[in-house]
Structures are given as C-alpha cells and as structure tokens.
Length: 128
Image (cartoon, rainbow, N blue to C red; front, side, top):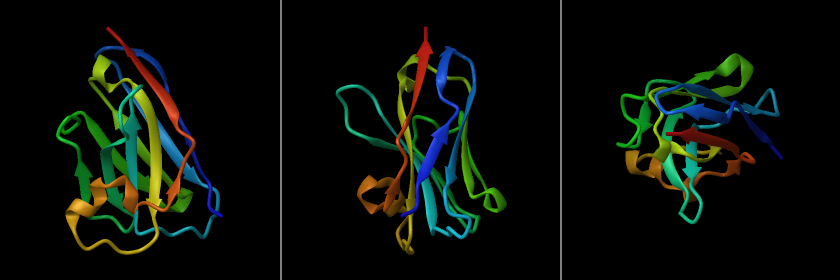
C-alpha cells in the first residue's frame, strides 16, 4: 500500500508563502495524476490543484490561480505546492492525493472521489 506523506505546513502571516511537499513511499510509484485538496473546519474537502504525473497538464481552483503552483519531481516521487500571497481564507488542512489510472475529462481532476491514495494532511494557518 502506497503511503503519501505531506510536509511543509505551518503558521504564516497573510501575504507570506509556504511550500508543501508530498512524497510517495514507494520508489516505483507511478500514478496518473497527483492533486492537492484542502479542508477547512466544518467544510467539505475541496480541490486546490492537480497535475499529470507525466507532465503537461495542470489544474487549479479559481481561488488559488496566480498564487499557487503545483509541480513534481518524478525522480524523488514528490509533488509540491508552492503557495504565495497567502490569505486567511487559505487556512485549512491540506491533503495530497494520487490517482492510479487515466482520467479523460479535465473535470475529473477536481473530484476527490476520483483519487485512490491520500496523505494524512498538513495544517496551514494564515494569520491576518
């Protein structure tokens, strides 16, 4: 069973930056896509960003476009989420997720039900 381990969360002031990392436990792990989701207290888990593992396509929630960047290092089996210009409303637990098989529709990347593996989450708190 593949394990995804997130790191990089913390407390930051509004306008600051953080970089989250998500490493897969198996060196041979080769998902079709990796994504980041977040869940604020009392709210549903929502899509933040996703990327195809082979590269080329990235997807972002409207709320983070222009501020967040998803990237990957296939050699390290790691996906990153660079978060800039953070806002208090970005406060949440951030989860990375992996999808094993192909997804044909762009809309599929946004649905957490389409992902097979999940990390334990890392807390991001943005103070005003």
